Image 1 (cartoon, one colour):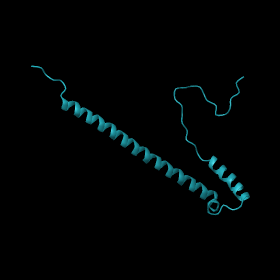
Image 2: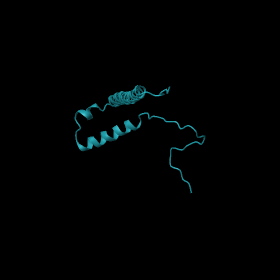
Image 3: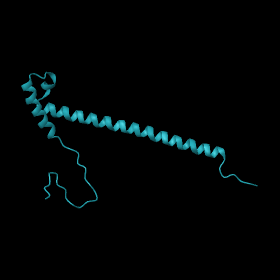
Image 4: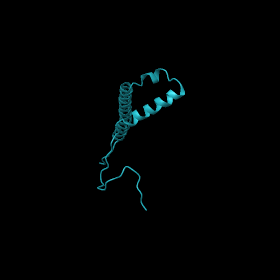
Length: 106
């Protein structure tokens, strides 16, 4: 009596489970990515709104005004945005200190 290790039903079941797992992984990944992206954009917009309100730049967005005013407000807005905190990404696996400025190696 010959025993069949894999029947057709077992192979089809395994294939369906594998396909379902791949599809579910793709769907969950795209949903989580979209949710995280929306959350990050909302937080960034709230941060910029708060900084603009604190610096008194609301009227720039309501009525831009003349070219000189736009240049002046542009410099102020640029200064405001460059003072925002940045994300720090530490590097692991190295013990050498890194310089953030240019290095002169001769």
